[in-house]
Length: 340
View 1 (spheres, rainbow, N blue to C red):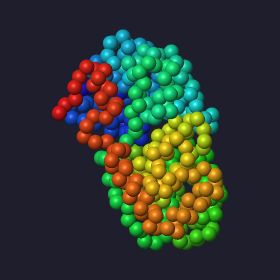
View 2: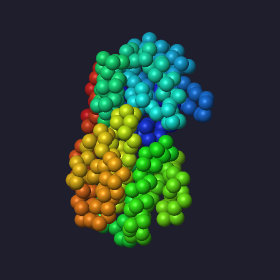
View 3: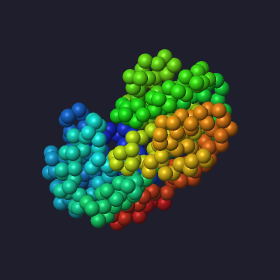
View 4: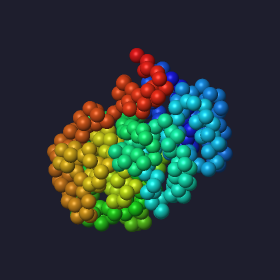
């Protein structure tokens, strides 16, 4: 099985890891990037496309200047799948990818019905894309075991460490936690340490009791850095927007793999979290503060919830040996059977 990928995402990016490389890793499967992107310059490898059994088109690739290539792919008669884990129809205006999402939608609205299938990560995305294509496949994000070890939760020494990990595009999400986090830091003092990995706000930049860790340049480096940041509590705030409601539970998986318990926004992406058993859910700032104080003051509860979450992670949220939903879809559309 040869799968050609049309994407502007680097193979080392989080999206490539979650949506392409991890779910398609299997014996007898060859995944090849058909586009070499270097800044604003893009070169297409025609041989990769010619040898492909299936062509996978990713996220922001459908654009006005890629339409001739899409036409050629459709004319070739091979299955062409479109995959996304973003609600392009609702990318916020302050998101740096908003203009690109609008451009993608203009092309996607014309071409969506011609794809053999549309692959998405959540049921919310499936509902949003259903009017555009008759074959919608939910292919959930799962953890890549080659990058994450899912370590066992352990009692740590020293202060209770609270981590927020995110890219600068999540500044608005982090800003919503300024008040509850400040209250926690002021109340517990040196008994608590706040770590911000990859994202901060001016409010936290002026606090000397907050440790900032700069962003890294690849997802593999991110997973390695997360493993090295020993922490007890992970934070995953999300603004209540249509775009965020369609997201997946990536942060729950990553925090759990690091042996930590998390506090998550009480929104659809974290419906997998069983409040009080595999993490805590919060909405209002006061609820976030209460959840944090509960976890700080109850180390036994922290370990118990983190252990429960790890068990569920390993049971249903890690890529295994058998082909997952996306690879099974590729085999079906190509009329092939998985290697055994």
